[in-house]
Amino acid sequence: MKNKNLLKIMNKETLLMKKQEFLEGIRDGIPICLGYFSVSMAFGLTAVLSGIPIWAAVVISLTNLTSAGQFAGMNLIAAQGALVEIGLTTLIINIRYFLMSISVSQKVDQKMTMKERMAVAFGITDEIFAVSMQRNHELTMAYMAGLILTPVLGWTGGTLVGAVATSLMPPVLSNAFGIALYGMFIAIIVPPAKEQKNVLFAVVLAIAASVTCAYIPGVKNLSGGWTIILITLLVGAVAAWLFPVEEREENS
Image: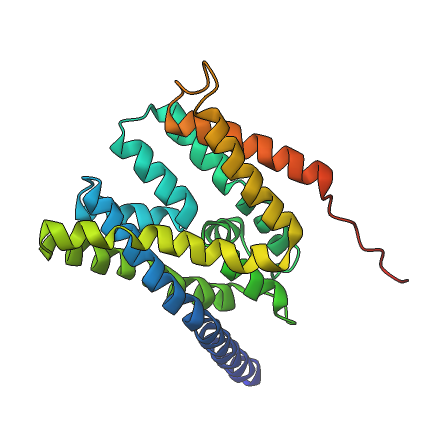
């Protein structure tokens, strides 16, 4: 009888702990959610202007969770690009999440099942990765579920609001709002470029390579997707060669 009561108390404490960790994850994810909402509105707006149905734009956001990859993929879909082209472009743009997931896997609860690890890996974004790596405690499934859930709702909800709002606007007004996409990218690029010379170099090199590709015989005839792949590989290789990341030696 005592063992049963003790077991009930332990289970109750475990549930309370999981609930607290889940709420902590939601709390930490709220700022990310608010930021994602505004950015994903631009995606929903641009998707509808590109001829993509509202429901398709929402499904894309719900199943991808990547701004740059979604914008690139959406443009290729609108341009009727080949599946291989779309797949390679989004793979190269999003391959950084592979490395992020490996880093997060070193901090997660060792009791986490493979399905739970796959769910966490699916929800990894740049901001979620940064918050999770800054947490001093072990990353439990309850905490990661809360941390991922809130931004996912913000990203998907923003896409829906942007897509619906655009479909209700007059064509003149909705086309004018299309400039929000360019403003968003400028806002993302300028701050780190002003602080880090390697980022500034990569941005300038990417612009120069993009302009150059428009005049090189053979290359200028490539579609947008293959051009993105070529420039990404070129800029990434040159930047990695000129600005290698130095490994920090841990003091034993």
